[in-house]
Length: 226
Image 1 (cartoon, helix red, strand yellow):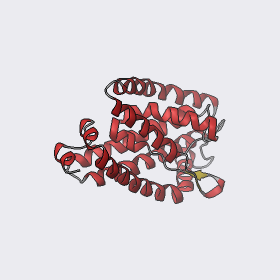
Image 2 (cartoon, helix red, strand yellow):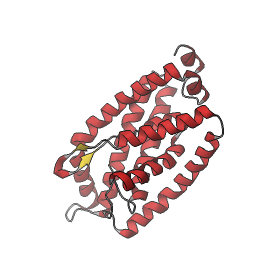
Image 3 (cartoon, helix red, strand yellow):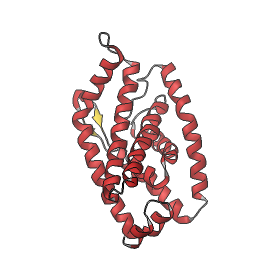
Image 4 (cartoon, one colour):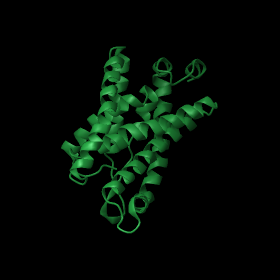
């Protein structure tokens, strides 16, 4: 979900820029550090950004004339940890706002926070938890991708509710309405994104097992049997 240009009050748009800025700056530093490690890391960084760009550009018509879409942010969070995704998602959202009219420049801060901060951290937290309890890699990946998508959707609904509270039921009532509007398409999209994530990492295990081991995504045993 990209909040459209001019849809947030100026003060709230500015606050979301201020909230997102530290995450983006930290993420940019992490990207610079990682890009100096090896050519393979640079390629994976570029692939993570491209995957997020392509997947989040897919629009599925929703009710009331709006649309829903996947995010792809969970994949980069697994590969490089969530801070990196704050920076990559900023680039993705900036290009989409300028080239595809997805989202906007004034709402960039809010969109970065939902898709580049909240989504990756929520998904990655579930991924780490599942890996600690020895869940299969594919289950951890699927849950991470799906939760990153749903968390983005939930935070965006809350951002819209803050901007446009319901006259009778207030913030929570508005949040419930925004959540229900997109639930019909966003939940199936999240499930589909989880499946796509499993296919993606299944492919990476076959062609780049050593790199996944170096990044800490695969254990030595998993990398050996990839």
